[in-house]
Image (cartoon, rainbow, N blue to C red; front, top):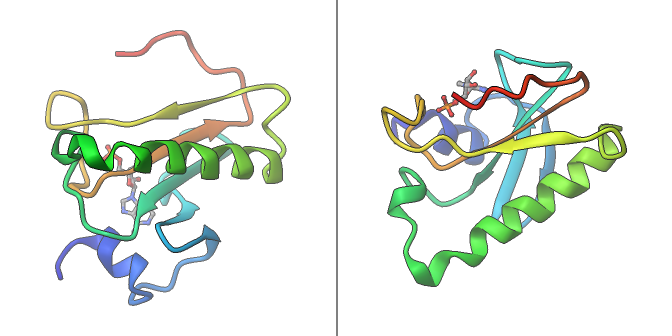
Length: 113
Ligand code: AMP
């Protein structure tokens, strides 16, 4: 198990867990790009969005629901925030375990790439 996010999900790396249920967990990004920068990950190791089968697509909805809940508890729901899933090398994915970034707490640039 050399995946850092699997280790966090397994409780092997001390991390403040902000939300968890049977499918996903959420914690703060170690290198935040904004006042609020959280990661929502599935407990199960899925290398990227490209590895998600059609039958598993409800997982993304589940992650987005968790993100909405966290946006409220982090106080960014009203002003707005961004959810991002980087996929693969050219998509800027560095950690090969599916994750959703929740970024907010300041006005974000319109740039996407
Ligand atoms: P990505 O480029 O989409 O793969 O983003 C991976 C994110 O994971 C980056 O924003 C990193 O700062 C973050 N990250 C890497 N290791 C950890 C860690 N141990 N705890 C929290 N965030 C991490």
